[in-house]
Image 1 (cartoon, helix red, strand yellow):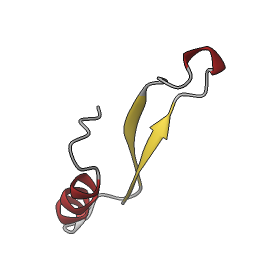
Image 2 (spheres, helix red, strand yellow; image 1 turned 30 degrees about the vertical axis):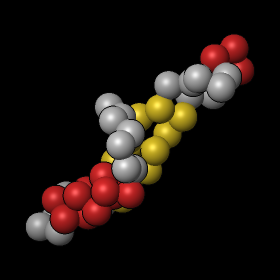
Image 3 (cartoon, helix red, strand yellow; image 1 turned 180 degrees about the vertical axis):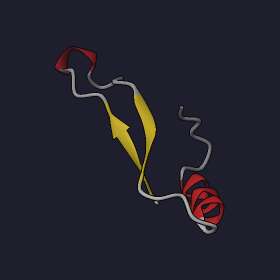
Image 4 (cartoon, helix red, strand yellow; image 1 turned 90 degrees about the horizontal axis):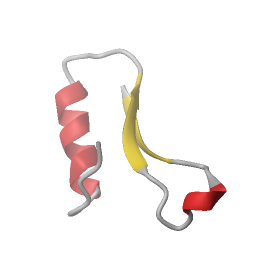
Length: 48
């Protein structure tokens, strides 16, 4: 499974377009570890 931050593309909301976490792929036994690592890279950002 892979995780990425997605940002809304509506030009009227720049620079404050909404962002969220997107997940894609097969859930495996390593998915929780990958998600924890990904979340750690976000620092204090709290995204849906």
